Length: 138
Image (cartoon, rainbow, N blue to C red; front, top):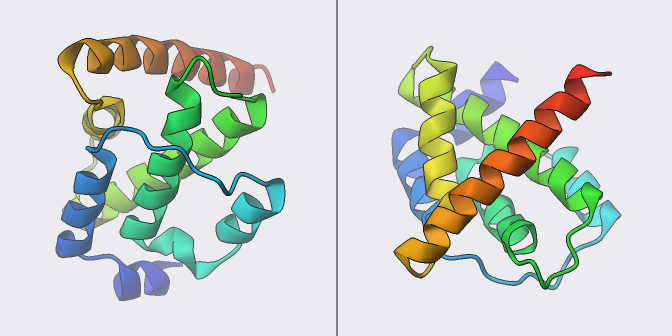
């Protein structure tokens, strides 16, 4: 795992990935269980730009109240968040989980205007609490 991180993770790639997350959500046409499962089982999860791409893809469904957001979307979203946070901490050699999560969540909340961005932050906080509480019970 460390070898793959060394191979695929660099500060330059992480900056590109952060810029990807900092874009307004866009609808994805490829939402199938096998699609995300295959990605999670591949080396792509060690590439910050790839993980950011899938997060960007999923955030449309997480934030759009008219979209069909399912529990499985949230599950995959947070799996990719966990992976991205781990890669971020590896690349920037930070040990502060709280600071890293805050930085990533701010990027993930970005939308076309400040009002939508604020709504996204509130919504993301809500679903993050749900996710943490649900996994704490397991």
